[in-house]
Image (cartoon, rainbow, N blue to C red; front, top):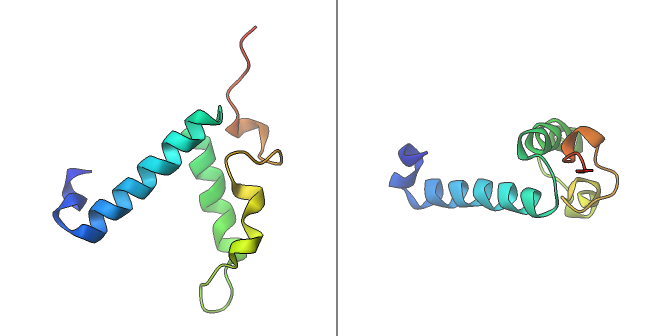
Length: 77
């Protein structure tokens, strides 16, 4: 990801991805599957201009109880 750090916007984008990944881990999620899920769901929320109403994002938050099981880390016995 070093390629994107040559601009302020690139560094900001990298930091955002890192924050989402770390927040997913803190919520016992598997980051790959969580990213896969949110990147599949976000386009469904876009209006004709490509905007997303922030009030419709609750179900995608890492602490949401409605996330698919594949996003969650298996519990250790």
